[in-house]
Image (cartoon, rainbow, N blue to C red; front, side):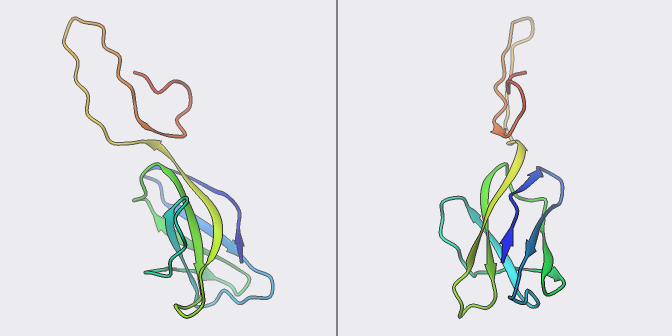
Length: 118
């Protein structure tokens, strides 16, 4: 199985599309891990679709950053790395400014376009 690099926006539903030639995707799932961590078969999200093309609805709860997907057939078979999942957007933060003064606020996040300054 393989998946194209996936780019999602924070607060929007993220969907990972998986394709396969010769391996039936029916009954399998995916897990999401921090980029750089090892694949795990814990609590996979079920794939829906056909035997050769399916997708996993990852929801909208991933924080901005880089993750990787892993394909899981069953716990007795080692999971397969599916590649990068990127979630773009701002991280939660708090800031305060004093009225009447110049204030620069750095907006933390991942994949923000332009300078992340307000």
